[in-house]
Length: 483
Image (cartoon, rainbow, N blue to C red; front, side, top):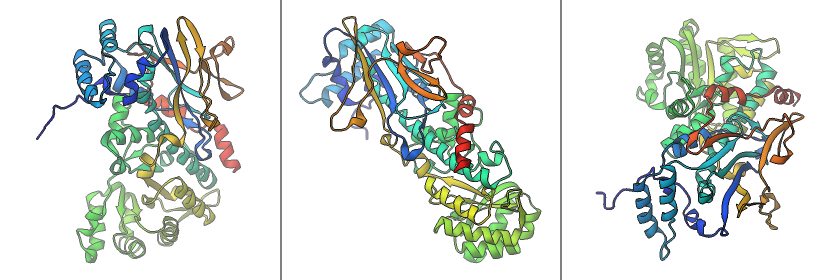
C-alpha cells in the first residue's frame, strides 16, 4: 500500500546532492558566473590514463531539452521543506525565474574532450559554466550529475586495459591481426547479474562495448542504440548453464551435451562442463564419445569451466584438448588447438587473472587464440570514483564583472590541489597538455569543444567513431611488444 505520494524520479531540481541546494546563498554578492572543470587525478594501477566516455548519455538523459517545469518546483519545495529540518533552503524564486526566462531549458555551456579519447591524468576533460549571470549557481548545482561520468569512463578504461593485456599476448603468440573478429570477442561481458541495477548494467555494459563486441548484457545494446546511435553494438552465442546440465542428472551428463549439440547443430555454442568432473568431461566425453560430432560439426564447441583455480584448470584442459583434438603450431611457434573447439573462462576473471592465464599459456607454448574470457562483477561493478580520482572543481569565478582564478590547495594533501583559470586542451609533440585559454597558439586546435549549450546537444558522437578513437594506438602497441 502506497502510504505517501510518490516523488517524480525525473524531477530536475532533485538531481543533485542535498548540500548543493543551499549553496546559492553562500557565494559573494555580485557573483555572475562559475567555471568548473573535470579531471581524473590518478593513474590507476599504471594504466597510463583514462578513456573519456559517457557524457553524451548524461546530457541526453538529464540535461537536454526542457527538463524543468512548474510541477517539479512545487514538488521540490515540499520534499526539501521536510528534508532540511528547521531550515528553509530551497531557492524557489531562482528556479521559478529560471523557468520563466528559459522555458525549462538549462542555460549552461559544457565543453568536453572527444568521447573515446584516452589521455593521461591531471588533464581537463570537461568544463561547465553558466551562460546567464542570474543563474551563476547552476554549474555547481549540476556538479553531482555531471560527475557521474566517472563510471562509464572508468569501466571503459578498465576494459581497454584488459584489451591491452590480451593484445600483448596476442601479438606474441598469434598470427592473426588485432583487427580480426576473433580478437574483438576475446573479453565477453557477463556482468548484468552482478550490477547494482538495470540502468547501471546498461551504462557500464555499453562502456565495455567501446572496446569489445561480446556481451550477454542486453541493456548495454539498448543504451548504445538510444544514446549513441549504435546498430547492434554487441553479440552473443547460445550457451548452457548449470541448470540445463544438472536437470539431466549426473548419470546422463553425456546426453546433456548431446542435446546441446542437437539443439544448435551449427555455429558457435558454449557448454558449461564442470557441473561434475570437468577433466573427465573434456577427456572422455568431449574428447572421447563425442569427439566425432565435434570434429564433424559446422561450427565450434566452446567448453566452459566454472570453478577451481583458473590458471591450474585451464592449463590442464589445454593439454587435454591438444591431446584429443590436435591442432597446429603457428609461425610464431605457439600451439593453436583445432578450431572446432576451444575454452571460455568466465569464473574469477579480472585484469590480473587474465594476465596470469595468458602468461601461463605463453610459457606452455599455447597461443592466446585458444581462449576467450568472460567477466562479470569485476568488469562492470568493481569500481569506484577514487580509482582514477575523478573530481570537478571551480577554477574561475566572475564577480561584478571581474574574473578571478580560484583553486584549492589543502596543506594536508597536495594531491588534491586543483587548477586555476580557464582551460584549453591541446596536443603538442604527441602529448596532451591542459593549458590556460590565453596560452592557445595560433592554428592550435582546442580539444575541449562545446557539446552542450542552453538546453541543446550541439555536438553528437556515434558509437563507431568512439570505438575508432578508443583503439590502442601504435605507440602503445610498440610499448606492449617491447615488454
